[in-house]
Image (spheres, rainbow, N blue to C red):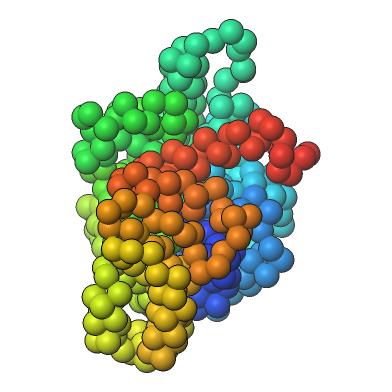
Length: 412
Ligand SMILES: [Mn+2]
């Protein structure tokens, strides 16, 4: 059976307060066509469907329009889970309705792990058991305990996740299908993250050793990490299909998976698991220009905005100056504009101090999101925040906001 695996769509995402709906609409159209061309049976959306827990109506409309178009492209259905950015209850709300369209959704884990295993059938009668494991929050996996130290709590969370994933494994084997698939939104220790950096993530709810993932899965489709990567055999992050920030230069793709179904399959992929990448075109280029004003001018001089893609270029400039120059932002904005490049953010770094002194072109403090501010503060300390650190920050922020009941009262 053939799947198209993607994740971290972040529909409704805004960059420097500019909405990216046009980009997402082009991407979803492209995704439908790509799935059709590749003859994918099912789509896997491994979490972070939306960027916020209260997506705009425009973002919701994109999502539903996309799901409703499946029959026109020969797509049989989809497997959708909630990520840390999604509201578990909002994603789950249309669950029964979407079931009619063969779209299986889990915004939050069900009390019984067996209820999160869906068996889908292929044309040749092959049966694939799919375990849907949405992002696990502490309340999903254990009862809160008072008076715990931070390491005790961390330990408790890890054990809770381990228990849940092992129950998922049991539920999968109990189904006795021809093949098994796990879809999860979590942060697992890949080879690059092992070692010293690990301590960085203590307290991170999603940090899970590979050995805790259900071992009986023929393929584990992950979401959460925005760079396409494969921490283990048959375990894969498809990565986000669009760059999420100016610093994200990793190549973007969606993953095609041919899952062998030993008793029945003579179709594509044959007896072996086969994984291929389909590159996602850049509908809009995001570019970070860093250097002195002269260096930046030179770099944009060779840029051809008209060849960049249907939506052109959005740029960020990190300008190095020896002495403060109040005119520099306006002057650069002018030059970018003449090149047809939209300059969304200017950061000035005074070379002696190595500290950016502004958050954006005339941007008031309240327009800077906590995520942006954290990244800005890291850079002020000459540390480029990597994705793992930003994810950990987002999770902590999410936790703090939920505990404080600041966002979405009544959200569960
Ligand atoms: Mn994400």
